[in-house]
Length: 191
Image 1 (spheres, rainbow, N blue to C red):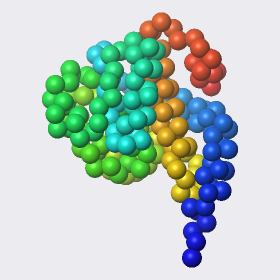
Image 2 (cartoon, rainbow, N blue to C red):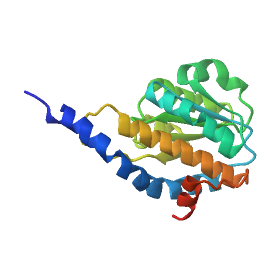
Image 3 (cartoon, rainbow, N blue to C red):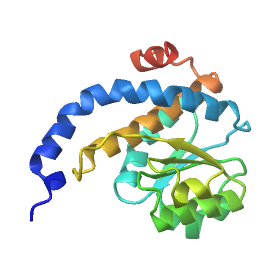
Image 4 (cartoon, rainbow, N blue to C red):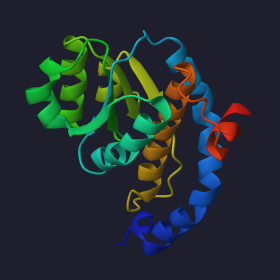
């Protein structure tokens, strides 16, 4: 018996919906980003994005946005490597963003827990805040991406990447770094 949620048409339909999904996610995420950033302790000496697989790649892709728009040294570190080998060397107050759409990836949960233990400020970026990652982190940015079934993860990847970009823009505004004024920032401020 064939599972219709795994059909190639599901993938095609989700991909076709991505352009409409992006402004919808901005509308949902931007107020959440502002609320999270308003409560963050300052100063933030650096940003570390972490995760596994696609989530790590989203962090790697967003690294430049944090450096450019927030003006902070930023790196993306694989979750196991961060949890076991780098976490105790982070400057106090480092902003650590563990990314996992499922919220269940053991190494990403471990990285979040260990980073918090060593004094980092942790904001989990996840599509499932009710799962382990959301329960581990003191702060959570939920990313709700509509899904029609089992696609290739393209829309969830884009949602996680968008959340990271918005955090970078919002952090830059909070730090008054160069007064971000591109089309995305203006669009977010209009919300």
